[in-house]
Image (cartoon, rainbow, N blue to C red; front, side, top):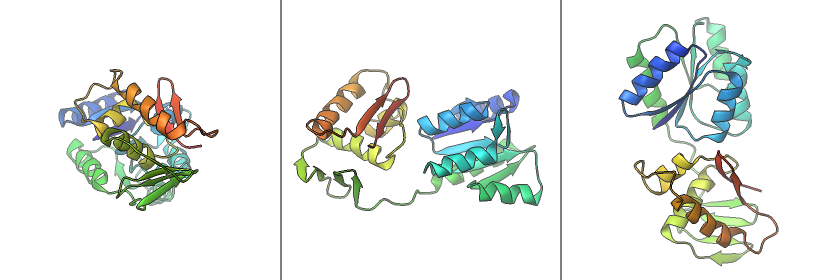
Length: 222
């Protein structure tokens, strides 16, 4: 599991991050609105723990921005506010749960795990991206009506891209899906696999669908 903590209180952020890591959960920390926004857009997380009061903006606005971008990662709003109106505003912004400071770490952990268990809306059996068709059940892939033969690893990579279409996905998340969490994401094996998939998907087509974002990851989309 990967959790993004967006919290401007360094002490609280550190305590939460260390507690999650002790439970075997990968935790990343951002302390500003801009940093949290960039990390949430560029990374792939199972849950976002989001403080309401942030330098440069607030958690409500950040949550609305992520939802407008189609990012459906469950969000646990974390704040010192406890008024009903604030809770309603958090849910209206797209938040999934709400925890008021001060809190017990055990409760936060339980809520994070509960949110992570929520399954995303299932994709249809066949997903279309531009003129690319991917059948997630039969593993058949077509581009402009032409069948494309993929290896098991190539299809696993494409499936991960399809499930995060339009989002930049980072190397660690891709590696954990295609191989496992113990795979070293900084070897060149991933680049080789992406290069092979890109040749099969994009070569011969004017519109390229697999894009590289240096230092961030890859994105599937026009």
